[in-house]
Length: 180
Image (tube, rainbow, N blue to C red):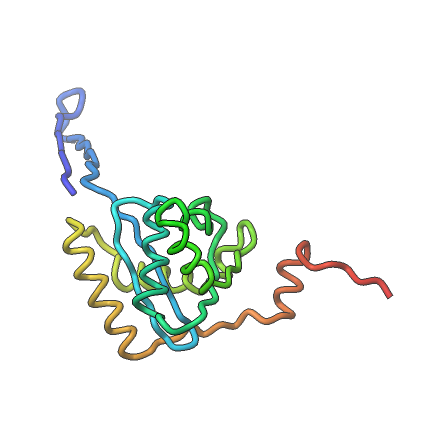
């Protein structure tokens, strides 16, 4: 981050000065969070963008590298890039189909991303790792890698306290009303 400061003397010959700070943004990075809550595993991928192709490549990595022998239940928000069609834009149809067949997709309700445990983990990462200015993507990757290795080594899981009863109250509009 670069900050430019300019000073001016106060009006009327007083000793008060005014300082004006200008924030200059150097770059932006996207963070994809993969989280397997039952085994306390997470993987954060840093990318320049969050496009359909970026998402598709992440999902291919999840299927082929991280869990090559497993059927994967994927819970995520309804972002327009998070669709199986993105796989077909990124890969040949046979490869896209192979990846898609390994996935069982579940989407969180609109305005319900807080139900996604990966979002909880992102909050923890933000507080523990990203709570300051990080000068460049190389440093960002190094910091996130260190954080994720420590969390994975300890197999830290989410303490999920949201029960079905809580869901019926909080998400009342999503549950059908049954009249006796």
